[in-house]
Length: 457
Length: 166
Image 1 (spheres, chains in turn yellow, brown):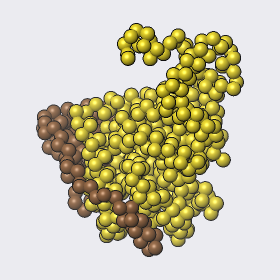
Image 2: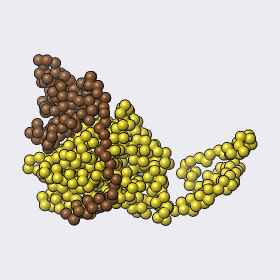
Image 3: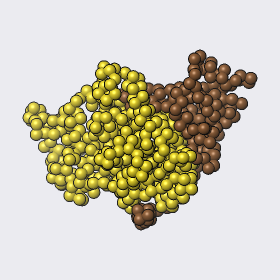
Image 4: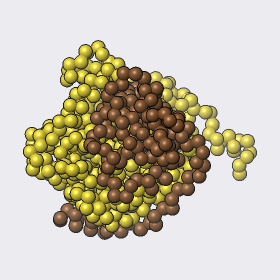
């Protein structure tokens, strides 16, 4: 059950040390991003990236058809899935036809969105997530908490205990080198002997019929070039028109995500290798509905770099799981309400609207504007979180009326100045109860000061 | 086939205004010092590189840069290098087995000295038409999934050496 962002965040924040560490770890990534994007043409690249995505969305049907023609000509089988259920069934059918029972899967937020792992597990197929961070959360029975850094909320001592249980490594061996080496041994074996490989795609290219996969570990490549079957799960919005467009995305993607100039492995594959099969599943699952809504259409431009997560003061301090959706952070907060408005109604409010996400977004999605628009939709649907409706309607009456506003200000200043702080910071006050301090109230407002000084009429 | 038709119909019904294809980014035409920029960037992403002097053989450069006792080295041909990100383009047509790019523990990529471009914009134009599979490889395999600590050699190559040769 979805408990709402602030309740879930309170749980994350109950461990203050971990919360502070999480905040710092992500800020470190944000700073790396700043250094990597220090290029003279950076802003022009963002313009171009935004334009090429708008171009792709404006020609989506034609581009998908062109992709299908070229991919098919190369020997790839293209499938279409209207929703998560259809996607899962298509993948299962391919695996069943080949009696595949062991599957190596590299990072794919779409398969998380579709709940592919539990679906296949229930049908006797073992799926091993082969990205190190994803393997950590999979062993722990969790979902990724971050698009690019799935296990960013895990500490190395905890990973050591987890690996001790599953791989038999020494319980006190917590050096990242040793842990990664243990995972390499275990995962390489899985990757080289899997019956099938499933990958996501960072982009698909209409001009070439190619699928583009970016990783730093090389796990996607080990899987797709070793297994007899390669299945690609990709959202229809990931298409770009040309290789030239792809070049622009590759320049902005890794720089925005981790501060690298490009990922270690960037694979462009248009055809299966001799003797192997390649399948691409093009997934809608709500994307065409979003395309039909001009107010939120641009959210489909997202390339999943997670720069908006790393910079967001709310995400950094509350952790990915507080969002209770596959995608967390600012981008999750504008995509989740489209999936289920009632369940995710708290997310558009989990933001200060500071605009930092918009400043770092490589495809220039106006996330703060969309958050605000979602708030209006939530209100219009009568789905405001508990208490919000009463507060907003009272606040609205005060803020819309000058006399009431001044009166409220006078009272607030008096209360803050003369009522004992212990009384104001009681358990009834969610503001102070969350660890915040009340401001020191001035004796008069700016307006009162200006009037007393004779500076206004 | 019903899914395909329904999805395409839904897209067309969404009636997104068609946008013109964006104009290409004009990147600085300065092509001096590309090898130096490449080698510097390659080092920053965990790789090493060198340029063969005349008469020198690749084996000699590999030996000098990697040190003695390297038996598991796999040497693959690279088509061209990209200065801005330290990447080398490798095409599957030049390999016996696609998995070679990730199976090798120590990978050496040999690239013609003249085959270098400044940015990905030029690089995309050099991908061979009809390529069935190709890679931009930038440094060795790596992960920072454990507490953001950089570990080299996550799944693929533990060392990556690029040698330019005439």
